[in-house]
Length: 274
Image (cartoon, rainbow, N blue to C red; front, top):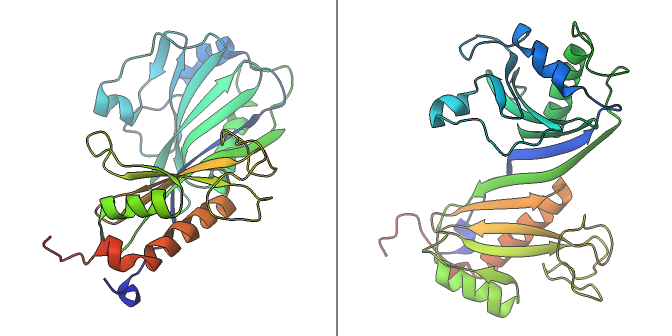
């Protein structure tokens, strides 16, 4: 395939995870005991609180429960409650179900969101309701004291089919990246990109004095952020594990440049038979 014919779609943020703290401890027992007063049924045509799980008890249902016939986990922690809310979307018409883990110490974790702004919007809405509950769940008004994006997942496509074996060899042998291809386990080429702001060589390899585990934030030497790039035969690409758009963009540009450089070796047109 000629590089002049190759096109990539823009990155699409599929989901992200945010965490933070609400400034005070939370009485999860009080929250659970009065949740039924504020819960909406699954078919309700507006936003609201759908479900809460606390310990081995649950009130309400989410769409996931209906589709998977999911039961309450028996391994839930006593100091944690899981809340499912339905909130209006900002990008398109409709609603989105958001999962919020609340901890007794005031911490929270949100999943099922598509942008940082949407996460903050949902959080502000939930806090406003919590602060006006009939029976208080905290010794002072809740407010966001800490907020951070912990995980960004994204995807995009190219207008070509991928020769996975050839691309995997190029990534692992020529570029010395950690890359695996085991199609009986996972259909994509699983490649790790080590991001570090302080590294002068932006080639996806950890150049720290002592090779790190990739669990850092990517801001200092010894604190690389490991990002996963999964490339599929269909031309779809998933990039996961980043903490901000700079990390995503660097991984996106890096892998696309390799694909463009070697496109005659690793790509074939969408209408190719073999």
